[in-house]
Image (cartoon, rainbow, N blue to C red; front, side, top):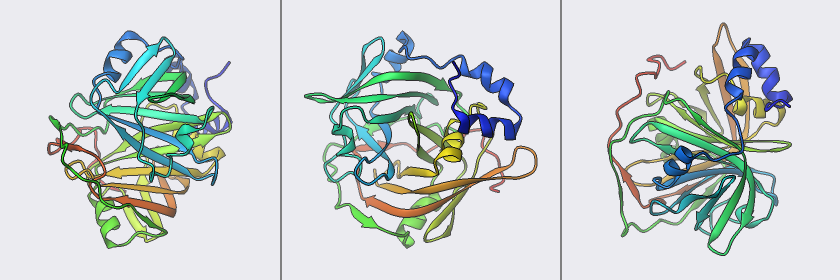
Length: 295
């Protein structure tokens, strides 16, 4: 049985990488290996992507805690202590049994990332995810940040709910070297990482962003999801102040010559939260894989 649905297959065929995708796809399995379990327990940040069952909107949300708040509690289960604050747009979804979720743990200190997708089950201390797909990605486009410290006295600001980007939100986007992308399909959800030099995400208008889709692992899970269902959510964060910008809307991919692809994202809603995360990361060392051009 293929690990890919029709949307991913369609994009793989457009890019001419189906054979490569089949090879890489063998790494997808529901088992959390020991090295993956050890990696999870070191992380202070987990990004969760899902659709809000009440509105149908797709969001990407950060969940933080002391290392060990995310851990493998079985060969095919990840447990999380805590969750997003009540005002987070995914707070209700992450208490609903059976919610399909995609998660990604990214460690800028080592330029490693791990993704785990499955079905959610609320627990007394947070939530658990029954793993359906667990896999790692290469370090491409991850900016190295040598240190991360907790800022326990940081007080989150009041979340601002918006329908379009203002100057403050546009400036955060323009400065971003990283964001997280949540997408969905009929059988689940996915959370992935996108990175590049600052400016790789462009604010086309208060309601539209665009970014180049750089060559990756050829699986085209995110673009495949968007091919089948254009709903998407973005999470951008300020790695120094902990400020977050969560966007929801829809995205489409434009295919150019060769491997050139551009994704255009239409913003339908936003939540901007100053000092949302109690984490402060050091300045980035940009990935050598980042293209110099910002198409």
